[in-house]
Image (cartoon, rainbow, N blue to C red; front, side, top):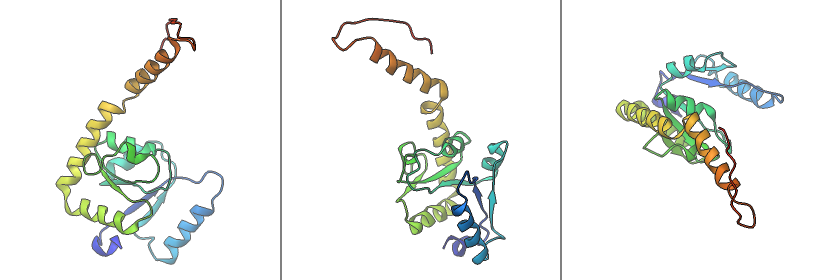
Length: 172
């Protein structure tokens, strides 16, 4: 659907198959059967994902029920517009039309509409990327996350079940 609206579209499918390769085989067969090999490429492991993200206009994670795709956080840190499904966990860190676009899981037409919109609205694409970067810096920083987890542990361990307070320093 999207190729009709964006003829110059190039798609890079990033990932590798660990164990069962049947899904990967199905994808490769689909690409071959539909003569998509000149504009869809499958890229396995790369040493530095920033190379791929840097070349991308948009990063899409359309997996169903994936807990959280680290690739989304990485792309957000690089100020890339992201598109995620509302299935799984990525939509919990991507706010629709604020830090990315969120579409209903399994809705190919809605995903297509998101990508066409980002192609037609480069200012929106850039703004989403910048707001995503800011969100990642303010909320997804590794040290900030570690400090929050440490706070949770400290609050749990400062009282026993009877409500008797005890304190023991926990080093992060």
